[in-house]
Image (cartoon, rainbow, N blue to C red; front, top):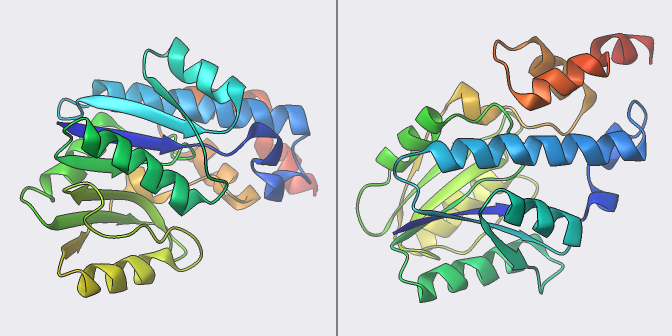
Length: 216
């Protein structure tokens, strides 16, 4: 069994770096829309057996249930501790691998997810999708918790170091559909301009995001 874990911050804390162009209500809507896109992609990925959303926000957990995926109430405020909680949960259910895919990757497709899974095809391996700024946008480990989670600034290098320390073979998979997260205004510009018809892209166009950013 391969379990996908989607961590989501409380909506009141999400995407604060976009506060100069989006209101609190718009940021909340953006996060929920991106989460919907990510869950849709995961549910369509053939090799993903189950999906869970871990969050301390009741609204996020309710959205997870509405999509038919497992809602995991977060017991830890720290992201890496919360991911460990989820990893232990799925390991206890018999998962042979876990995929961490944050909710702010609305361009993720089932095919991109399958490519990442294919790169981690045996025990004690891991596959990482780097972000554009040296972070980690997705991390697949086989078995679950094969290496400790090191999400945060410079997490790609920190995951590489953790893999080396735990004798885990780590592969970096560069994929345009997994490299663009939505943290800064220029990320939103790129998202709006990319080909595709995700709900997130439709929302950004409805919000006239390009015009807003150009006026800041």
